[in-house]
Length: 117
Image (tube, rainbow, N blue to C red; front, top):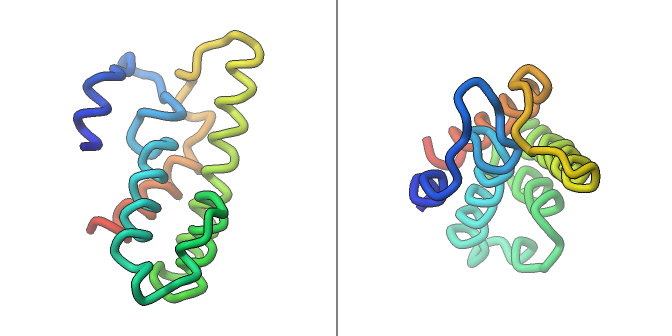
């Protein structure tokens, strides 16, 4: 499904799209959905409608993610959303210099590896 969505939203070479590039917001959203679907039966705290940031922190607190992975991904997601909102308010593209969000991308990719291997 992730690749299908990516094909529908192509990213120019040499830029980082805060939503659709690997390490972007969409990866966080898919990872959180997977955690909730796979683990909420045993972890009712994942059933609350509290948003991706809180769910990442709850998943880490429940031991479903390694130490620091959930909180780093939550912080990265917040930064990515902020960048997306600012770009849209300024009527600017959400495809940016990849170095501008390198740390956030790294945190999201670590989350992806933790969830999907």
